[in-house]
Length: 151
Image 1 (tube, one colour):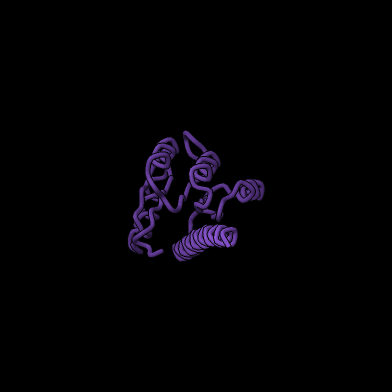
Image 2 (tube, helix red, strand yellow):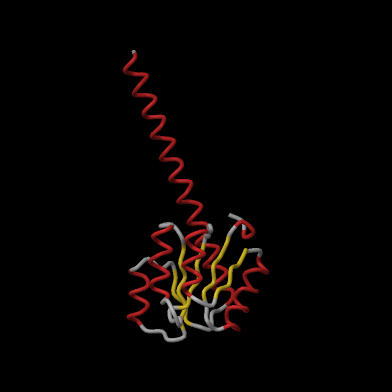
């Protein structure tokens, strides 16, 4: 998937961090939806397609873990990247166990976040290709079985 074909939701209550991260990702060619509140992110995720979610773990209204849970419910293959200024091993383990693709401590290194997103999108593409191949194989197998029965 090319960067211009991917939509990234960035949920960060710190305006400067949100703007910086959004600018970095837009410069690469991603469509970025920057949001301050978790409730806004939940609403957007319910009604708009998205490929990656980057969320702060600590938000004033809805926590990043809840955003992770809903994003995975809507699209199990979505990459959710968690970031925090208050890192702990417990939080990192919880995030990964709940399906986070990656966990970053702020400030986030621009090259690391870009590489992580690139890898996440490649993984999504491969999962989709695999799913399509399995479906094609199942259709072919069914057709072959039906043809064999007629013989």
